[in-house]
Image 1: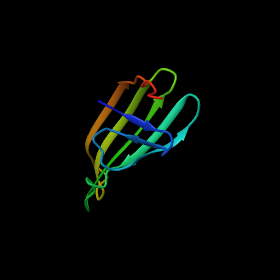
Image 2: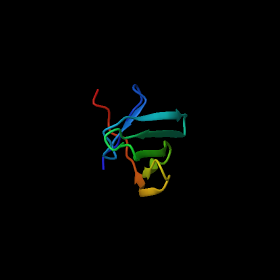
Image 3: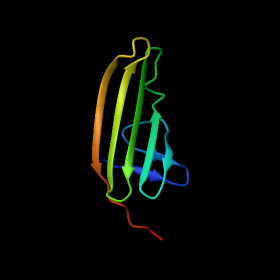
Image 4: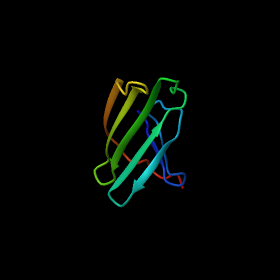
Amino acid sequence: MGIIVNFSDRTVLGFGFSGTIKITSMNEAIIAFEGSDPKALTQVTDWGIRGIVDRVTGILEATSTMSNLETHEVLRSTVYSLKCKPTQRMF
């Protein structure tokens, strides 16, 4: 799985989401992010993701959840635990 952290736009790309995943906070050690997928949003369902990247170890942990907006029941949940490697700068 490929994840792209764009510090300029303060976004994270990946997880099969077509929507924007925003970086909500970051410091020298942690990057926190969350977002929702507007293509999955209907009148009764919402699909969102929330997680963190440890900038020291490269470990990413995130949870993607599809829930029913009327009953607040979780319909599907996926937990990601990834070991990220930084890419080499091209310039």
